[in-house]
Amino acid sequence: MDNALWRGGWVTRLRIVSGLVLFIFAFFHFMNIGLGLFHTDLLHGMQDGRKFVTRHNLISLVLYIALIIHAGLALYSLARRRTLRMPFSMALQAILGLLIPLQLIAHIVQTRYAHEIYDVNDEMGYIIILMWPSTAIWMQSLLVLLVWVHGCIGLHMWLRLTGWWRTAVPYLIGFAVFVPGFALAGVLTEGRRLWTDFADPFLREQYIEHYNWPSPDEFEALFGVTDTALIVFWSLLALTGFIYLGRKLWRRRHSVRVRYVNGPEVVSEKGMTLLEMSQANGIPHTALCGGKGRCTTCRVVVEEGADHLPAPGDVEARSLAAVGAPEGTRLACQMRPTGPLTVFRVFRPDGGRDRAHASQGQERQLAVLFLDMRGFTARTTGQLPYDIVFLLNRFFDAIVPAITAQGGTVDKYMGDGLLAMFETRDAASSALAGLHAAAGVGTALERFNRQLEAEGSPAIRIGMGLHLGDLVLGEIGAARHAPRTIIGDAVNVASRLEAETKALGVELLVSQAVLSAAGLRTAPEELRNFELRGVSAPVPALLVEHAAQLESRINPEEQIA
Image (cartoon, rainbow, N blue to C red; front, side, top):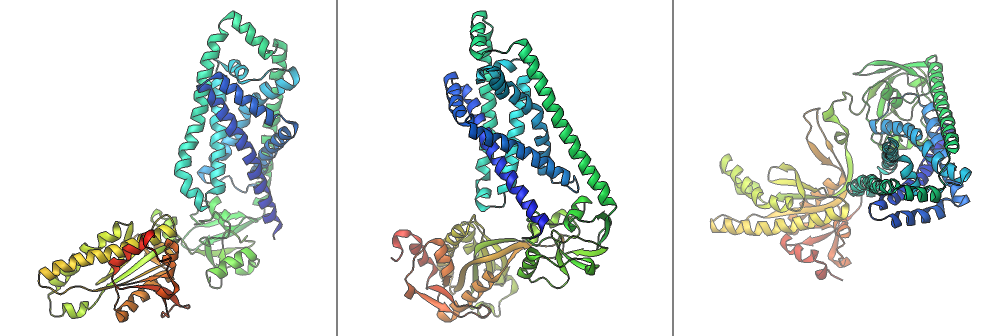
C-alpha cells in the first residue's frame, strides 16, 4: 500500500477515535447542564457522577490525550493541505474547530486547573456564578454551540455513506438541535436562581466558602495561565500557517500543466491527484464517493501524456476493472500527474446543475414490474387511431392507480405496455409494494373488464413479470433533455418473465427474489425454473393464474408453511 495513503488512513482513524471520545464527553456534559432547567439537585447529582468517572486518573489521561491528539491532528492536516478550497461543511467544521480553543482554554483553566492547583470546588454553581451576568456567559454559551456543531459535522462526515445513517438523519437532526438548546436553557435557569441567591450578602458568603472561591491573587494567576495557553495556541496556529505557505511555495516550483477537453488549462503542483487539481482550480469534477476510488465517477480519459503517469495502483485497477473501463481511462482521485496532460472528464464535463450527482446514476435494489396487453394488434386492427388511443388511455387509467397507490412509478409506457419501479426505502419494502401493486392491477383489470362486458366489448388480457434486482437510476440522454430512467439486468428479467406468461396462459410470474425479499414463504414445488434469453442462470418464479389472487398470499396468515 502507498505510504502516503496508509499515513492518511492512520491519521483519519486517530481523528475519528479521539473525536468520538471528546464528543461523548461533551454530550454528557451538555445534558448535565440542561438538568438545571428542572432542579439544582439533579444538576449537581449528575455532575458528581460524571466527575467520579472523568476525574479518575486513567479516564482523565484518556480525555486529555484525545484532546491533544484531535487538536494536533487538525493542525497537522491543515498544514499538509495542498489547497484551502474545500466543501462548505468541511470549511465550517475547520473554522469552528479553530474557534473552540479561544473559549475552551479559559474554561479548563478556571475549572480543572483551578481545582487541582487552588482546591477550588468547581461545581456547576461556581462556574455559572463566575460567568454571570457578564459577557462570559454568552461566550461560554457560544462554546457549547461551537463544540456541538463541530462534533455533529464530524459525525455526519464519517457516517454519511452508511445506509442506516441516511435513514436516521431526519430524526437525529431534531435531537442535534435539542441538545444545545436544552443545555442553554439549563444554564439560564440555574444562572438566574444562583444570581438571586448571590445578591444576598449572607448567602454570598456561604457560596464563597463552599466553593473555596479564589482570591484576587489566585484569579490573577489563573488569568496569566489562560493568556500563556492562548499564546501557545496562536503560536501553533501561526506555525501551521507558515508550514502550509512554505509547502505551497515549494510546490509551485514543481508544477504540472493539465488541459481539460471542453474546459480550461491549469497549472497545479506536482504531487496532487487530478481530482485535487480540479477542486483547487474550481473546475467541476464529479466524485460521488469523495475521492476514495470506489464510485469511479471521477473517471477521465487521458488523451495526451499517459506516458507520464505511473501505473494504476491496486484500488484504482480494481475499480476500473469492475466497470469495464476502456484503455486510457484513469481515476482522477487516484492518479498524480507528473507531466503535461490532456484529459476528458467522462461525467459532467460541462458542470451544469442539471447534470448533478443524481444524473450520473444511483445504484439501488428495487422491484420492477413489466406489463403487456395480450392480443392488442388483433383487437385494434381496422380501428381508427383515435379509438386505439382512447382504449389505451382507459386501460391505463384503470390499472395505473394500483401501481401508484403502492408508491410505484411508471418509468415508461411502451405502446400497450409499461415498465414500473417501486422506489422505496429498501429492497424488502420495494418487493412488498410490487406484490401489492401486481395484485391491485389484477383486481382493477377485473373491474375494467366488467365495464367492457357491459358495453359489449371483449375483455382485455394481460401478462406481467415482477422481479427484484440491482438497478441504476439516472438521467440518460443529452444534457437538459435527459429523462430519469432505470437500466439493469432486473429490467431484462422482468421483461422475459412477462413474455413467458403468454405461453403459460397466466397473468403473472413473480421471481423468487421478490418473494424472498418480501418474506413470503413458498414450497419448492410451487416454483418453476425459467431459462430466459440473455440471463445467465435459471430464474425460479411463482406462477399466478390471476394476479388478483396474489393478495391472499401476501397476508402472513395465509402463507404456505
